[in-house]
Length: 219
Ligand SMILES: [Zn+2]
Image 1 (cartoon, rainbow, N blue to C red):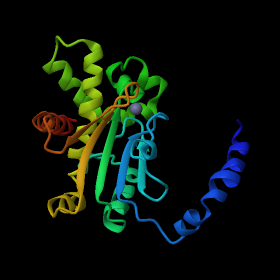
Image 2: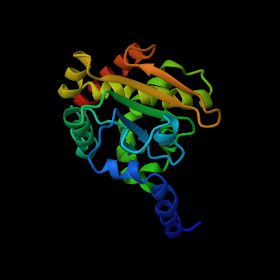
Image 3: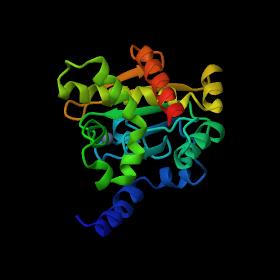
Image 4: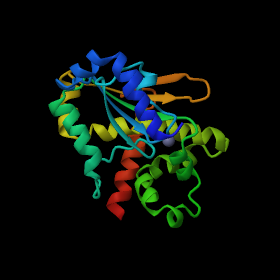
């Protein structure tokens, strides 16, 4: 079906049958959750959380990355959406959703030629290279397939630590107004693993963070 037909169908079927709901949306938004996901077309927050329009505030980028506050080339587009969600919309949850078969994470694991072919993507995902390096160093015997999955999971949990580098996020978490969680969505099986900020991975994340800081200082 072409896109024009799709928007006509939205108006004729979805909108007309739920008109009251859509008219009420005009009054404003009150999302409970900021969902930070990969741009991957298969990862869809409204479906995973069984939510409607107005419930979820979105950030999507390649490999669901949140730049750390201390990184020199912090990307304001990501941080501005976090700032708005936390300070103005006062969302109750921030979910960072990693997923299986992630192209961004796969590029981090297989960097050959990526810098030349995809320079912007490479610059962006290189924020998570330290996680991949950590896995290589710590688990040299692990199968590549498992290393890739571990990167996808650790990369999601790492972003919770990255979020906590912003004062306004940390304060909201510490006062109990905001809850941070990482999800790992296994696309083929439909299962979602949930990790809290203080999860089984938290010690690993601390190690990765300190090695990345060291790396930045040396640069
Ligand atoms: Zn992805």
